[in-house]
Amino acid sequence: MKTLTPDGLVDLTEEEIAQMEAEKKAWAEGANDRIAATHRENRNDLLAASDWTQANDSPLTAEKKVEWASYRTALRDLPTSEGWPSVTFPTEPS
Image (cartoon, helix red, strand yellow):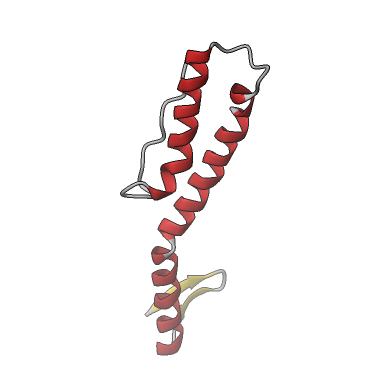
């Protein structure tokens, strides 16, 4: 097998080919972990941005607080959802 380097094409040894294949496989197998980490970070940001909705002095009505509380619960439950990390985030209340 040949590969392109800055110096041109070079022949790879069987060991180098095996190493490349192992690295490709490890990268592909880690895809869900990378997606999950990104989703957790986004979820945490959304939770932090909506903390104010649950404060005692929030200007929201009791009904709206319940909507926001349900939204926040759905966010917290995402990692335990079936299909995680391929999930749809809940819609923020208006």
